[in-house]
Image (cartoon, rainbow, N blue to C red):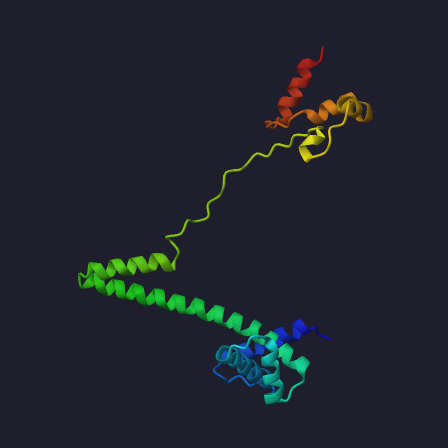
Length: 202
């Protein structure tokens, strides 16, 4: 059995295909009912601007005689469907607007209207966000971790003879190793390492 999300994806694909075919792709009675409720819910929310979704639920229940849980699902699906559709339409309109500005710019240059061409350039820069700082690769940062046995750094009370207690607990050698700062190193070639080892041999 399909999940609620999977059923929405199936309905989304079918209804979107219906829109792309200008209504020529047939929908089942169930899907057509969902499509009509989605449109009605969107138009209600845009025109009436209800303070809560509960008002839209009541509208769908009274108008389409669906259950209240189904009306809540319709509202959720309406928001998901039209949010995707409107984002796609917005990008398409942006592409068309850029094409029109480019055409106007070409005509302006042909007629010697440099002022209009300059305005077209300004609009193209803004539409393509060329006036905004571009993301650049940041230089790698070196993070140093220093281990400090001073509890005062975290707001704790000082501990008498802390150094001696730490050394006794973990060992003086281990304490010294922990306090060593990590530094950059260069990878050693295995051949060079082998030659160094041979030279060290008597």
